[in-house]
Length: 116
Image (cartoon, rainbow, N blue to C red; front, side, top):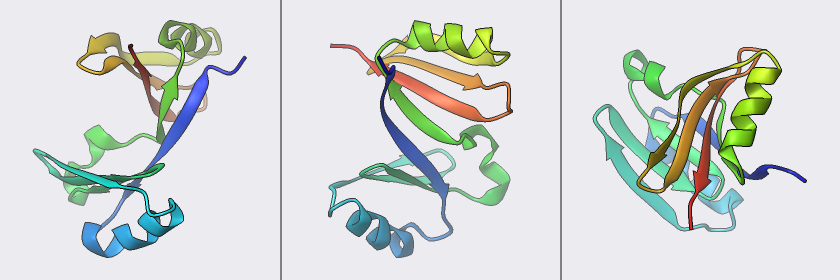
């Protein structure tokens, strides 16, 4: 049984308005959800999370993808058993559990498990 429900790719872009039409169309004209961070603007279109954040402020946002899972504790155990490390969490947030982990190969992923 797969623990992964879905994956959202993270992309840094220089111009959110210019980049969005391509990803919206690729996602079957998915509804766009926009929000702001203290460092810039972000938009979610289907399986694409576009981040319009200046290059010198990107470090806290750098990860390969956001992965939605069915059991975040099982994911933490798998990552650490295979030589990776949990960087943050798992911790309960307003929308469920969240964890940031670095795999043994150096790739960093954000894991989320929605509750309810």
